[in-house]
Length: 185
Image 1 (cartoon, rainbow, N blue to C red):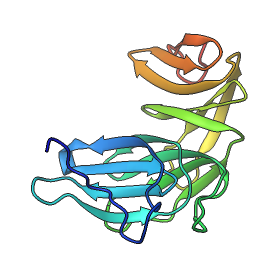
Image 2 (cartoon, rainbow, N blue to C red; image 1 turned 45 degrees about the vertical axis):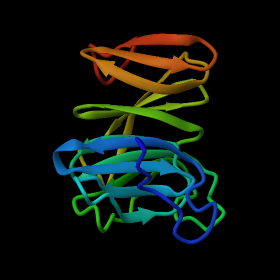
Image 3 (cartoon, rainbow, N blue to C red; image 1 turned 90 degrees about the horizontal axis):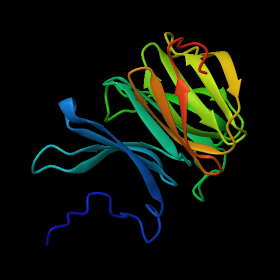
């Protein structure tokens, strides 16, 4: 069988019913998954794929910042199991020990969707057509330093050099110039 299931329900049908995003810390052999379960950390080193820890709720997008910090966004719908992730916005998690995911720092952002990191800034898209530039130099006190409008319904952003490529559900593929990283054009 070419498939190996590493995130199977352990407490009945449906506990891992909607996994929609992953981020990989290849250096440390950790895979992070997000969805209706919330944020989950898995050890994927050979012969030992296992769930290490979880933070319950609903999360749609992930961005690995470093081996000790991961960002995620939520549109604010909680899971059926009284999740800890309930608010609409950005969550920054301390994952320096993936077997004990730290309590997140939360920043409210309406309609938060995709995100991308280009040191030292995190860019958070939102379904209201905005890109927010966020200073995360203090992961416990993230600060929105700019909002750029002009998108329609952005979902995902990938950064290559100084260009951000955005998948927008209404506009298609859109690019932004990040030559001035604080103010995307």
